[in-house]
Every structure is written in structure tokens, then in C-alpha cells.
Length: 280
Image (cartoon, rainbow, N blue to C red; front, side):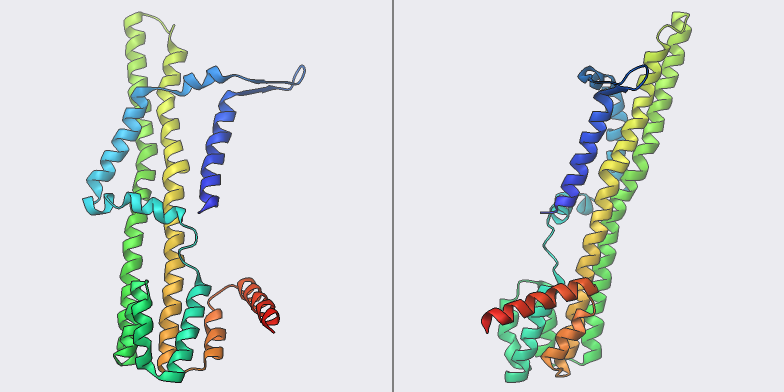
């Protein structure tokens, strides 16, 4: 579970609500009070229709239905924090290298059948089928490139929503101001100016909240997941190419660990030593 995303989103919502209902005065004396009634001042159905409705329909108009239908999948990807672990792939590649050294590349076919990751399975089968190394690398790298392009298109959908929400917030504000001015001319005075101005500005508030608290974090999280997946797949490509050349499994591990941060390498090395000492 991606606790950072959940904590960050809930924390922002809670802090925002506290900012609305909390009143603190310092002079002439310090006073603190909670005023839940303030929340009703920030609710306006017309503003919700304009900002959320128009933003959603512009996104629908801008992207194909297949991508829109993938939105539930995007949230599943965001919330799954343990899907791509480079160390797991490194361990599995080292195990494959040991098997290939003992029994040959054909022995990896059984390992491929057990593999649940389609990309990893494809890479192993290309090894087993004894394709030319350059062709294997080209096929796998093209797969990574087009996968990353699809992921960027998904993130761009939320970027589009993030840019549209504040824009329609301003549109809603203009609609509110026009209604306010019309009301002033008909009523013959500015008696409702404050209330009408407040309603006009609520749409801008809604647009900023949608863009910065909802859509921007989703786009960022999707790009982070893409970077993690690309890293793991690059490790697979590098590992498969090394296995084909018969590289030593121990050297292969050290080679693949260079894709990870030094702190991660040190922690993994420390855990490995502890585990080894326990076995001994």
C-alpha cells in the first residue's frame, strides 16, 4: 500500500478543512475557536457543476475511451507500492545465471513457464530460442520504449485535467461576477455584493483544489511508477544479455546492483551478510 500518497492526500484535506473552520486571534489576547458553520460558506452546487463537470467532459473529449476506461487501473497502480522491486529481479536473474551455467540456456525454459511477469518471461524465451544478442536487446528495448510512451499518455490525461480545472474555475468566477452585476442592476444597490462575490470566487477555489490536491499528485505518482518499472525492465535486459554471454553469477549481481542507489546496495549487502552468518 502506498501510504505516502494516502497520508499526503488525507493530510492536505484535513489541513484545508482545519484552515476553514479554525479561527485564531492574537491581539488583544490569544483566542482559539472552531467554527464548523464556516464549511457551508464553501459549498456551492453551481460551482461544482461548472468546475468538475466541465473538466471531466473536456478530458473525455481529449482522450480515447480506452484510456478513460483505464482510470480505475491507474488508481490501483498508484496504491500498490510493492509492485516493482529491483532487488527481486536481481535475485531472480542471478538464479537464472546459476541455472544457465550448470545446465545450459535450454534449462531456462522451465523457469520461463513459472514466470508471472510477461516481459521477464519474453526475455527468458528469447534466450532459450538463441536469438542474436543485438536482436534480443532491440526487441526488449523497443518494448520498454513503447510501454513508457503509453504511461506518459496516461499521465498526460491527468495533466490535462490539472490545467483545465483552474481554467474552468476562472470561467465559473466570471459567470458569478456577471450574475452579481446583473443582480446589482436589477436590485438597484450593492446589498448582496459580499455574498455574491464569495460565491463567484468559490469556483476558482474548486479549480485550484482539483488541480493541486487531486490531479497533479496522480500524474506525478504515475510517472514515478513508470520510472520504477523502466528501471526493473532495464535490469532485466542487462541481466539477460549478461546471462547469454555466460557471465559469472556473482559478478552479475554486482553489475546489476549498480542500477540501485548506494544506500540500497549497502542495506542489501548488510542483510545478505546477516543472513549468511545465520546460516553458518
